[in-house]
Length: 246
Image (cartoon, rainbow, N blue to C red; front, top):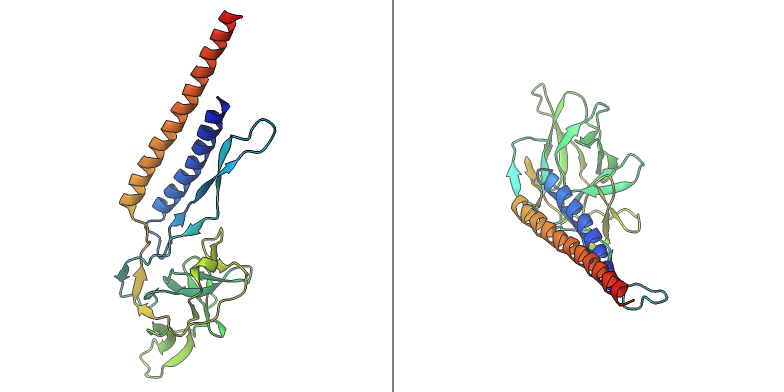
């Protein structure tokens, strides 16, 4: 009887985690450059005296869906999107290098090019400092050029965005939403990565698919709850029979 309880209980527990992941993805369906989180589970035997046939569900290594999202032209000179594979390199508050597909850039109060989340955007030589009274133009190769706002004709190439294309199997998502290499070592620049200027990449989460998945998980959870209830009823009836026969 308790074999059914183990199976239903562990299955219901994993389904709640799956539902949390789907809800998180759905909440980020409008987040620029967001990559949907993935869940994976496997069955593991429960070891111990008298429990060789019990099986429990556990979470395996999770990942992300790196399918590119749709590109949307914005007309904003500070917006940029990766055209194809690759990532922008940014600097996290702890000084580590991390990677994102979010190219909605702004100029911070300290004059550095940043993401809207406040992470410093890295060029091949480090953080990119923007001179005051200048507008920026981002080229397809990632070159950041400053143009005087007063109408001057002199332009200055400030830096080239650090564009990387590491193996996605070697990337892990951090709690801050950025990706980092498993080893923690910075990924090398990749000259083949191209940029779509004045464009942003949408989230690759399909809201309709996410809603359908939520409904499916809810039904699976209900099934596990019914199995637990059935196991409880069977145990009650068995106890009653044993009481009668004794």
